[in-house]
Image (tube, rainbow, N blue to C red; front, side):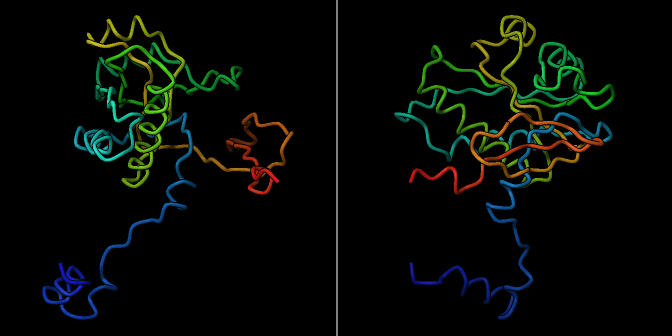
Length: 212
């Protein structure tokens, strides 16, 4: 294929100078900044199956340890199943006194992640890559997520009649929280906290992450 073929073809169809009119997408740094763990959602917004499918589809493009591709995904939309999932997951362990999520802000859509083989370090590698990638896709679509690993696995498997053991749950929705990152030095507390309704997440600064 000739160099710049797509750009030349774009100009042929839309005219020269049309590049500036192309819709711009947020860069990776913006997606990463906005990809915050959200524990409160706007329930007036209803997540659709197409959105969950687009998130799940990123798993056809990402890395997999030893290329084993053992993860399987069960989408859950608003309704009785979502209510059951909510009853079986726990969130905000570092803020137990708040009993998160607040009533009326519970997530109503989920992607339940299962493994076709017993959990191992390779499966966990795939799980981390998968959840981060799906969360970034959600942010690209204007949604937010929470990665949940604190839940009743046995009851969830039974409630959704899953053929495999669930190993994580990704809550999905339109976030209603204000979340800010705070740069800290190595050795300082990394516990997230809230002040006047704002959720603060400490992150170790880049300089302290580098081994000298």
